[in-house]
Length: 388
Picture 1 (tube, rainbow, N blue to C red):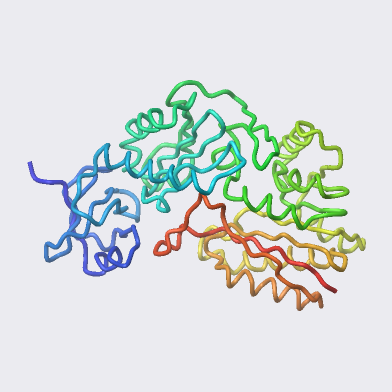
Picture 2 (cartoon, rainbow, N blue to C red):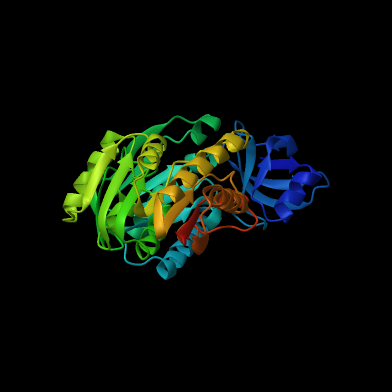
């Protein structure tokens, strides 16, 4: 039986030699493998490029696991998972919830694993990781001994791989609801229906960092279940949490009660409209927090997204008292940090506000960035002070 294989163009081979982990379908000359198999990849001259997951559906046809001529077996995946765990032992602190495996950032492309207390949540986002899902679950159960492992496999990325969207328990038992603490703040989470795998773990370190700067009257826009607001509550006089989802705000309210916090109020509504309303009414705050969903989910949506980001940041700067703090975030991969910084500068100029950046941040360290894979960096967070 011939070895499972794929042949790629010179351009594809150069892309991998340059450190990226993906080869697109247009650079694949031929394959001899079933969907989801690990293939030995060579260039058109027969030179070894590495070993990769093969997909017959996605435009990302090959996701590289190694550039070496080595066996990709259970022992291989165990080593990668243990290496990911070793990094977390150095960078994760004071939390019961963190990202255990961050796909390409941990050299395990299309595999996501998050921990929430005694439970793990897994996403297998390509044909390759889906094919080995049972093996990954066994390794995770053996290495981390969770009480249960849940798959949250409903991201649209799976549709591009020809895979169904599913949510199910793969190991042990997982309750409808669990409570975990992050940075000393307790959260009630619905692991089956919450955003992403249950919470926005990529912002965990930013929640704590931003709270150092907040005081007085705070407006938290796009609050979702209130993570920024809950972290700021101990330092602020009052916090108004705004979100378009009444369901999310009800969870935020329950989280405030869980932490015995009485200085939060909640308003359901569109943040764009509320910022405009408060601007026209002359409202002022000591701090504004902006943590919107991704406005640019594709490169084609970037121009409109930049207008949206500029509008909410401009209005937020207008609402700030002198000395006030704006915590502003973007999770749009297609919006570069330099572009985000430029539109913040433009917003400040239009307002006539003198501002300074007191801290510039990104995603939590359990979401490591692979420098040669720009897709692994997406979250931007600026802490800006209005001086006058």
